[in-house]
Length: 148
Image (cartoon, rainbow, N blue to C red; front, top):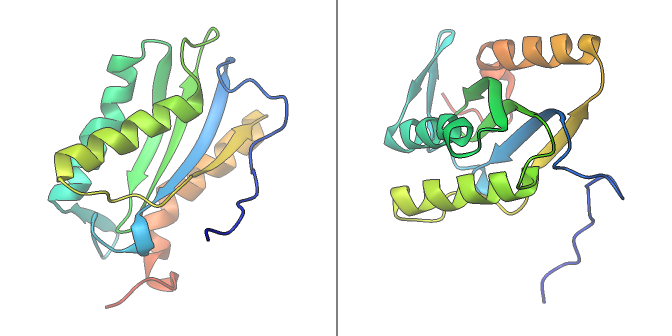
């Protein structure tokens, strides 16, 4: 029997409303299949390139969404997604479409269930998250999933 999962979404929050969202999506089993980090840069694998292309396509598929910043790490993806003017689909639906399309193009399921999201509520928070995303490759050697 599968364990009961705790709902990590904000109760009564409409994830179609205008706002900025910090998302993290991890690979299944935290496998390092999206690329490698060398020095301070990321060399994407074929799967990583697919993930990046599909992530960027979100803003083409959903005109009410924009990717503000993103990084593809060996075992996860970080992005700041801006949704404007009460989107036709929710953040969750966009993430499900992203996961489905990348898995289809990779010819296997590559993502773990669920994803992390955080509603960005201030300019200070936005700046802190942007710095975190930018510096994430530099912190890879400290990650418990890192294997030289």
